[in-house]
Structure formats: structure tokens, C-alpha cells
Length: 181
Image (cartoon, rainbow, N blue to C red; front, side, top):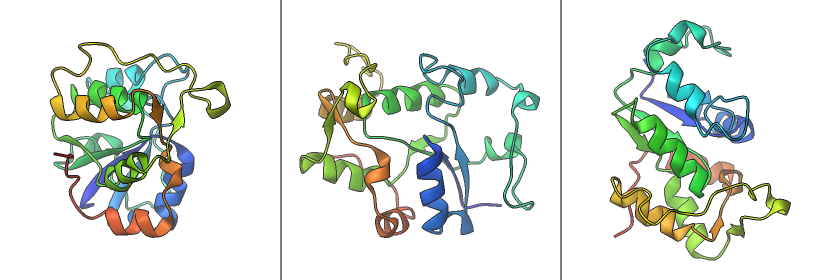
């Protein structure tokens, strides 16, 4: 049984997590952007809908035959999300949290938060592929005050998860994410 299950927003970051050694102790699942959806406007709804119990509709591709079935992985007591430091990633997290009560943000958000605070982010613009992100709503994330705080930080600009080095991924993958005060 893996120590944790980590849902990773995109396949390139998934590959980097494997390269950094995370797969030795954790089960990693690439969610392909908006929660395994086929269109960019689904905002995690496809994966969320599948989590209602229709496990057979998921197609699992395994690199290691010892990895558990998806239905077992998605009921693991420790499931984390590692995505970009942007509004849509937090929307995907909120969407999936409704179906996975033990869902938490990965500690990899720690270095992303630090880099973002240091001005390493980018605006939501066509050149960054982020132009379709809806602005932060006035009451959005009101039910999740800690996520609201993070969303406010990235209301004008985000940061891609791919900016982390292999060393940062390896070093921060074992701890708990601590929300900023």
C-alpha cells in the first residue's frame, strides 16, 4: 500500500514526480488538466462524476503491476492534489474535495507559494495558455477560507507546477502542506 496517493494536474509534472522518486513511496495519478476531462471547460467534472462510484468507467494505465486498482487508490486515507498555483487548480481541488473528504493539498504547494510570493508567477494571458480562467468570484471559496486565501494570492497571476526542480519536488513531497498564516 502506498503511503499517499497524489493526483497530479498534468502529465509533464507527473513525469517529473516520477523522475524525482515520488513513485517509490506514493501512488501517482495524472489527471490530465481538468480532472481527466476531454474538454477544457469541464473543470474536473468528469473525474468528480466518476468518483460517485462508477469505477469501471476509469481506464487505468499502470507502469508498475503492483499498483492497486483505481477504486482502491481513490479510497486511500491520504489523497493529495498537486496542480498549478492558479485559480483553476484550486477549483479542481474544491470540486474533487466534495467526493474525496480526505483530500488535501500536496506539500508541493509550499515551494509554489514561496515562488509566487517572490514574483515568479505569470498573468492569465493567451501566451501562457491561461486566458480562459474565470476571475475569482466575490464569494468563491467562502466555504474553504484557507483555499480562498490562496486563490486571492493568485487572482491576477498564477504559477505552473512545472517550475519546481526535481530537488524541490523530492524535498517537499514528504511533509504536510502548511497554509500561510
